[in-house]
Length: 363
Image (cartoon, rainbow, N blue to C red; front, side, top):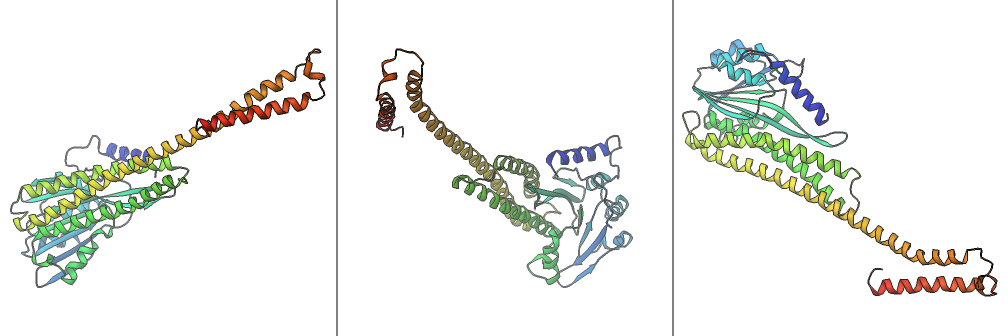
Protein backbone atom coordinates (compact mmCIF):
# COMPACT_ATOMS: atom_id res chain seq x y z
CA UNK A 1 0.00 0.00 0.00
CA UNK A 2 1.35 3.40 -0.97
CA UNK A 3 1.89 6.19 1.54
CA UNK A 4 -1.00 8.16 0.03
CA UNK A 5 -3.32 5.14 0.36
CA UNK A 6 -2.30 4.65 3.98
CA UNK A 7 -2.98 8.34 4.68
CA UNK A 8 -6.45 7.99 3.19
CA UNK A 9 -7.11 4.93 5.36
CA UNK A 10 -5.84 6.81 8.40
CA UNK A 11 -8.09 9.81 7.61
CA UNK A 12 -11.03 7.49 7.17
CA UNK A 13 -10.40 5.94 10.57
CA UNK A 14 -10.30 9.35 12.23
CA UNK A 15 -13.53 10.35 10.49
CA UNK A 16 -15.28 7.33 12.00
CA UNK A 17 -14.85 8.82 15.49
CA UNK A 18 -15.89 12.36 14.54
CA UNK A 19 -19.05 13.39 16.36
CA UNK A 20 -18.98 10.55 18.91
CA UNK A 21 -19.17 11.32 22.63
CA UNK A 22 -16.08 10.92 24.84
CA UNK A 23 -15.24 7.35 25.91
CA UNK A 24 -17.38 5.88 23.12
CA UNK A 25 -16.75 2.14 22.90
CA UNK A 26 -16.55 2.07 19.09
CA UNK A 27 -13.90 0.26 17.10
CA UNK A 28 -11.95 2.57 14.78
CA UNK A 29 -10.07 0.59 12.16
CA UNK A 30 -10.46 -1.58 9.08
CA UNK A 31 -13.17 -4.22 8.99
CA UNK A 32 -12.09 -7.68 10.14
CA UNK A 33 -13.99 -10.94 10.34
CA UNK A 34 -11.48 -13.14 12.21
CA UNK A 35 -12.53 -14.14 15.75
CA UNK A 36 -11.21 -12.33 18.82
CA UNK A 37 -9.29 -14.73 21.05
CA UNK A 38 -8.72 -14.23 24.79
CA UNK A 39 -5.70 -16.07 26.18
CA UNK A 40 -5.14 -16.45 29.93
CA UNK A 41 -1.92 -17.14 31.81
CA UNK A 42 -1.86 -17.21 35.61
CA UNK A 43 1.37 -18.02 37.38
CA UNK A 44 3.67 -17.73 40.35
CA UNK A 45 7.11 -19.15 41.09
CA UNK A 46 5.77 -22.70 41.64
CA UNK A 47 2.95 -23.15 39.13
CA UNK A 48 1.36 -21.90 35.93
CA UNK A 49 -2.19 -22.17 34.66
CA UNK A 50 -2.97 -21.51 30.98
CA UNK A 51 -6.26 -21.38 29.14
CA UNK A 52 -7.06 -20.39 25.57
CA UNK A 53 -10.31 -18.99 24.21
CA UNK A 54 -11.44 -17.76 27.62
CA UNK A 55 -14.91 -16.26 27.91
CA UNK A 56 -14.82 -12.75 29.38
CA UNK A 57 -17.35 -13.72 32.05
CA UNK A 58 -14.80 -16.18 33.45
CA UNK A 59 -12.20 -13.47 33.99
CA UNK A 60 -13.83 -11.93 37.05
CA UNK A 61 -12.61 -14.86 39.13
CA UNK A 62 -9.01 -13.91 38.30
CA UNK A 63 -9.29 -10.19 38.96
CA UNK A 64 -8.42 -10.49 42.67
CA UNK A 65 -6.17 -13.54 42.47
CA UNK A 66 -2.87 -13.18 44.40
CA UNK A 67 -0.94 -14.77 41.53
CA UNK A 68 0.11 -12.82 38.43
CA UNK A 69 -2.60 -12.85 35.76
CA UNK A 70 -1.86 -12.12 32.11
CA UNK A 71 -4.84 -11.65 29.80
CA UNK A 72 -3.83 -11.48 26.14
CA UNK A 73 -6.55 -10.39 23.69
CA UNK A 74 -5.78 -11.00 20.01
CA UNK A 75 -8.00 -8.59 18.09
CA UNK A 76 -9.81 -5.44 19.22
CA UNK A 77 -12.40 -5.27 16.43
CA UNK A 78 -15.09 -6.71 18.74
CA UNK A 79 -15.93 -3.80 21.07
CA UNK A 80 -18.22 -5.86 23.29
CA UNK A 81 -15.56 -8.49 23.94
CA UNK A 82 -12.91 -5.86 24.68
CA UNK A 83 -15.27 -3.96 26.98
CA UNK A 84 -16.15 -7.12 28.91
CA UNK A 85 -12.46 -7.90 29.49
CA UNK A 86 -11.78 -4.34 30.63
CA UNK A 87 -14.84 -4.25 32.91
CA UNK A 88 -13.65 -7.40 34.67
CA UNK A 89 -10.57 -5.43 35.78
CA UNK A 90 -12.32 -2.04 36.22
CA UNK A 91 -10.50 -0.29 33.40
CA UNK A 92 -11.59 3.31 32.77
CA UNK A 93 -13.85 3.92 29.72
CA UNK A 94 -11.31 6.39 28.29
CA UNK A 95 -8.74 3.60 28.25
CA UNK A 96 -11.25 1.32 26.52
CA UNK A 97 -11.73 4.03 23.91
CA UNK A 98 -7.98 4.20 23.27
CA UNK A 99 -7.74 0.41 23.04
CA UNK A 100 -10.49 0.27 20.43
CA UNK A 101 -8.95 3.01 18.28
CA UNK A 102 -6.09 1.97 16.00
CA UNK A 103 -5.24 5.66 15.58
CA UNK A 104 -4.19 6.07 19.21
CA UNK A 105 -0.67 7.47 19.35
CA UNK A 106 1.96 5.68 21.45
CA UNK A 107 1.77 7.02 25.01
CA UNK A 108 1.92 6.19 28.72
CA UNK A 109 -0.75 7.27 31.19
CA UNK A 110 -1.19 6.54 34.88
CA UNK A 111 -4.67 5.96 36.27
CA UNK A 112 -5.88 5.17 39.77
CA UNK A 113 -4.38 1.78 40.50
CA UNK A 114 -2.99 0.90 37.08
CA UNK A 115 -0.84 2.11 34.20
CA UNK A 116 -1.89 2.27 30.55
CA UNK A 117 0.59 1.96 27.67
CA UNK A 118 -0.13 2.31 23.98
CA UNK A 119 2.53 1.48 21.40
CA UNK A 120 3.07 0.19 17.88
CA UNK A 121 4.50 -3.18 16.88
CA UNK A 122 6.65 -2.64 13.78
CA UNK A 123 7.85 -5.24 11.27
CA UNK A 124 9.44 -4.83 7.85
CA UNK A 125 7.62 -6.30 4.88
CA UNK A 126 9.17 -6.79 1.45
CA UNK A 127 6.57 -5.27 -0.86
CA UNK A 128 6.53 -5.54 -4.66
CA UNK A 129 8.11 -2.12 -5.19
CA UNK A 130 9.84 -1.06 -2.00
CA UNK A 131 10.05 -2.46 1.56
CA UNK A 132 7.54 -0.95 3.98
CA UNK A 133 7.08 -0.94 7.73
CA UNK A 134 3.93 -2.68 8.90
CA UNK A 135 2.62 -1.20 12.15
CA UNK A 136 0.07 -2.80 14.44
CA UNK A 137 -1.54 -1.32 17.53
CA UNK A 138 -0.74 -2.79 20.93
CA UNK A 139 -2.19 -1.69 24.27
CA UNK A 140 -1.02 -2.76 27.73
CA UNK A 141 -2.76 -2.27 31.07
CA UNK A 142 -0.53 -2.87 34.11
CA UNK A 143 -2.19 -3.44 37.48
CA UNK A 144 -0.41 -4.61 40.66
CA UNK A 145 -1.24 -8.27 40.01
CA UNK A 146 -2.55 -8.30 36.44
CA UNK A 147 -1.46 -7.42 32.93
CA UNK A 148 -3.90 -6.94 30.06
CA UNK A 149 -2.56 -6.86 26.52
CA UNK A 150 -4.63 -6.01 23.46
CA UNK A 151 -3.24 -6.59 19.98
CA UNK A 152 -4.70 -5.34 16.71
CA UNK A 153 -4.61 -8.89 15.36
CA UNK A 154 -2.91 -12.20 15.90
CA UNK A 155 0.79 -11.43 16.33
CA UNK A 156 3.63 -13.66 17.49
CA UNK A 157 5.62 -10.85 19.13
CA UNK A 158 4.72 -11.97 22.67
CA UNK A 159 5.19 -15.70 22.04
CA UNK A 160 8.80 -15.65 23.25
CA UNK A 161 7.68 -14.20 26.61
CA UNK A 162 4.87 -16.72 26.88
CA UNK A 163 7.25 -19.60 26.18
CA UNK A 164 9.71 -18.42 28.85
CA UNK A 165 6.89 -18.39 31.39
CA UNK A 166 5.77 -21.88 30.39
CA UNK A 167 9.26 -23.35 30.71
CA UNK A 168 10.09 -21.22 33.78
CA UNK A 169 13.25 -19.91 32.14
CA UNK A 170 14.66 -16.67 33.48
CA UNK A 171 13.27 -14.80 36.45
CA UNK A 172 9.83 -13.89 35.06
CA UNK A 173 7.85 -16.32 37.20
CA UNK A 174 9.56 -15.09 40.38
CA UNK A 175 8.89 -11.38 39.86
CA UNK A 176 5.81 -9.17 39.77
CA UNK A 177 3.54 -7.97 36.99
CA UNK A 178 5.69 -4.93 36.20
CA UNK A 179 8.53 -7.25 35.18
CA UNK A 180 6.14 -9.01 32.80
CA UNK A 181 5.35 -5.64 31.18
CA UNK A 182 9.07 -4.98 30.90
CA UNK A 183 9.51 -8.35 29.16
CA UNK A 184 6.67 -7.56 26.75
CA UNK A 185 8.07 -4.13 25.94
CA UNK A 186 11.51 -5.64 25.50
CA UNK A 187 10.09 -8.09 22.94
CA UNK A 188 8.53 -5.20 21.01
CA UNK A 189 11.76 -3.17 21.08
CA UNK A 190 13.74 -6.21 19.94
CA UNK A 191 11.37 -6.31 16.97
CA UNK A 192 12.25 -2.68 16.27
CA UNK A 193 15.96 -3.54 16.18
CA UNK A 194 15.36 -6.56 13.91
CA UNK A 195 13.38 -4.39 11.45
CA UNK A 196 16.12 -1.74 11.50
CA UNK A 197 18.77 -4.38 10.87
CA UNK A 198 16.82 -5.44 7.77
CA UNK A 199 16.64 -1.82 6.62
CA UNK A 200 20.40 -1.54 7.18
CA UNK A 201 20.87 -4.38 4.67
CA UNK A 202 18.94 -2.34 2.09
CA UNK A 203 21.04 0.73 2.88
CA UNK A 204 24.24 -1.33 2.46
CA UNK A 205 23.04 -2.46 -0.97
CA UNK A 206 22.22 1.12 -1.96
CA UNK A 207 25.66 2.36 -0.84
CA UNK A 208 27.48 -0.50 -2.58
CA UNK A 209 25.57 0.16 -5.80
CA UNK A 210 26.28 3.89 -5.69
CA UNK A 211 29.98 3.50 -4.90
CA UNK A 212 30.36 0.66 -7.42
CA UNK A 213 28.84 2.75 -10.17
CA UNK A 214 25.85 0.44 -10.74
CA UNK A 215 23.04 1.75 -8.51
CA UNK A 216 19.44 0.66 -8.72
CA UNK A 217 17.72 2.63 -11.51
CA UNK A 218 15.12 3.73 -8.96
CA UNK A 219 17.70 4.61 -6.31
CA UNK A 220 16.35 8.15 -5.81
CA UNK A 221 12.79 6.88 -5.28
CA UNK A 222 14.04 4.07 -3.03
CA UNK A 223 16.06 6.45 -0.85
CA UNK A 224 13.14 8.87 -0.58
CA UNK A 225 10.78 6.03 0.32
CA UNK A 226 13.06 4.58 3.00
CA UNK A 227 13.66 8.01 4.53
CA UNK A 228 9.91 8.58 4.80
CA UNK A 229 9.39 5.11 6.29
CA UNK A 230 12.13 5.70 8.85
CA UNK A 231 10.64 9.08 9.77
CA UNK A 232 7.25 7.45 10.41
CA UNK A 233 9.01 4.69 12.36
CA UNK A 234 10.76 7.25 14.53
CA UNK A 235 7.43 8.89 15.39
CA UNK A 236 6.30 5.53 16.78
CA UNK A 237 9.50 4.79 18.71
CA UNK A 238 10.10 8.13 20.44
CA UNK A 239 6.83 8.08 22.48
CA UNK A 240 7.74 4.59 23.71
CA UNK A 241 11.06 6.00 24.89
CA UNK A 242 9.23 8.81 26.69
CA UNK A 243 6.80 6.35 28.28
CA UNK A 244 9.58 4.15 29.62
CA UNK A 245 11.36 7.26 30.90
CA UNK A 246 8.20 8.26 32.77
CA UNK A 247 8.02 4.79 34.34
CA UNK A 248 11.66 5.13 35.39
CA UNK A 249 11.08 8.52 37.01
CA UNK A 250 7.98 7.55 38.96
CA UNK A 251 8.35 4.27 40.85
CA UNK A 252 5.16 3.34 42.67
CA UNK A 253 3.23 0.35 43.92
CA UNK A 254 2.71 -0.55 40.25
CA UNK A 255 6.31 -0.11 39.05
CA UNK A 256 8.62 -1.36 41.77
CA UNK A 257 12.18 -0.22 42.39
CA UNK A 258 13.68 -3.62 41.56
CA UNK A 259 12.20 -3.33 38.06
CA UNK A 260 13.75 0.09 37.38
CA UNK A 261 17.12 -1.46 36.54
CA UNK A 262 15.50 -3.50 33.77
CA UNK A 263 13.56 -0.48 32.56
CA UNK A 264 16.77 1.55 32.33
CA UNK A 265 18.27 -1.20 30.20
CA UNK A 266 15.13 -1.15 28.03
CA UNK A 267 15.44 2.62 27.75
CA UNK A 268 18.99 2.16 26.43
CA UNK A 269 17.70 -0.28 23.79
CA UNK A 270 15.09 2.25 22.68
CA UNK A 271 17.75 4.95 22.48
CA UNK A 272 19.77 2.54 20.33
CA UNK A 273 16.75 2.14 18.03
CA UNK A 274 16.31 5.93 17.76
CA UNK A 275 20.02 6.45 17.10
CA UNK A 276 19.95 3.68 14.49
CA UNK A 277 17.01 5.33 12.73
CA UNK A 278 18.82 8.67 12.67
CA UNK A 279 22.02 7.00 11.48
CA UNK A 280 20.23 5.17 8.66
CA UNK A 281 18.52 8.37 7.51
CA UNK A 282 21.90 10.13 7.49
CA UNK A 283 23.44 7.27 5.51
CA UNK A 284 20.60 7.43 3.00
CA UNK A 285 21.08 11.19 2.65
CA UNK A 286 24.80 10.64 2.16
CA UNK A 287 24.19 7.91 -0.44
CA UNK A 288 21.81 10.19 -2.32
CA UNK A 289 24.29 13.09 -2.21
CA UNK A 290 27.05 10.79 -3.45
CA UNK A 291 24.79 9.47 -6.23
CA UNK A 292 24.03 13.02 -7.37
CA UNK A 293 27.71 14.03 -7.15
CA UNK A 294 28.85 11.03 -9.17
CA UNK A 295 26.18 11.69 -11.78
CA UNK A 296 27.29 15.31 -11.97
CA UNK A 297 30.90 14.18 -12.38
CA UNK A 298 29.93 11.77 -15.14
CA UNK A 299 27.90 14.50 -16.79
CA UNK A 300 30.88 16.86 -16.51
CA UNK A 301 33.13 14.24 -18.12
CA UNK A 302 30.70 13.78 -20.99
CA UNK A 303 30.38 17.54 -21.41
CA UNK A 304 34.16 17.93 -21.46
CA UNK A 305 34.56 15.26 -24.13
CA UNK A 306 31.78 16.75 -26.25
CA UNK A 307 33.31 20.21 -25.87
CA UNK A 308 36.71 18.93 -27.00
CA UNK A 309 35.18 17.18 -30.00
CA UNK A 310 33.23 20.33 -30.93
CA UNK A 311 36.36 22.46 -30.49
CA UNK A 312 38.36 20.15 -32.76
CA UNK A 313 35.72 20.08 -35.48
CA UNK A 314 35.14 23.82 -35.40
CA UNK A 315 38.30 24.74 -37.40
CA UNK A 316 37.79 21.71 -39.62
CA UNK A 317 34.32 22.94 -40.43
CA UNK A 318 35.76 26.39 -41.17
CA UNK A 319 38.37 24.96 -43.54
CA UNK A 320 35.84 22.75 -45.30
CA UNK A 321 33.47 25.69 -45.55
CA UNK A 322 36.11 27.96 -47.08
CA UNK A 323 37.08 25.45 -49.73
CA UNK A 324 33.48 24.47 -50.31
CA UNK A 325 32.64 27.90 -51.70
CA UNK A 326 31.93 28.11 -55.44
CA UNK A 327 33.90 31.23 -56.40
CA UNK A 328 35.62 30.97 -59.80
CA UNK A 329 38.82 32.75 -58.76
CA UNK A 330 39.97 30.77 -55.71
CA UNK A 331 43.64 29.86 -56.37
CA UNK A 332 43.53 26.48 -54.58
CA UNK A 333 40.35 25.33 -56.35
CA UNK A 334 42.16 24.44 -59.59
CA UNK A 335 45.47 23.55 -57.95
CA UNK A 336 46.61 19.97 -58.60
CA UNK A 337 47.46 19.40 -54.92
CA UNK A 338 44.63 21.52 -53.39
CA UNK A 339 42.71 18.54 -52.08
CA UNK A 340 45.76 17.06 -50.41
CA UNK A 341 46.71 20.45 -49.01
CA UNK A 342 43.29 20.88 -47.38
CA UNK A 343 43.47 17.41 -45.79
CA UNK A 344 46.98 18.11 -44.52
CA UNK A 345 45.82 21.44 -43.11
CA UNK A 346 42.94 19.75 -41.30
CA UNK A 347 45.24 17.02 -39.93
CA UNK A 348 47.77 19.55 -38.73
CA UNK A 349 45.05 21.58 -37.06
CA UNK A 350 43.75 18.51 -35.18
CA UNK A 351 47.24 17.49 -34.07
CA UNK A 352 48.03 21.00 -32.89
CA UNK A 353 44.80 21.25 -30.91
CA UNK A 354 45.34 17.85 -29.28
CA UNK A 355 48.91 18.84 -28.36
CA UNK A 356 47.69 22.06 -26.75
CA UNK A 357 44.91 20.23 -24.88
CA UNK A 358 47.35 17.68 -23.50
CA UNK A 359 49.79 20.38 -22.42
CA UNK A 360 46.99 21.96 -20.42
CA UNK A 361 45.87 18.61 -18.96
CA UNK A 362 42.45 18.65 -20.58
CA UNK A 363 42.82 15.23 -22.17
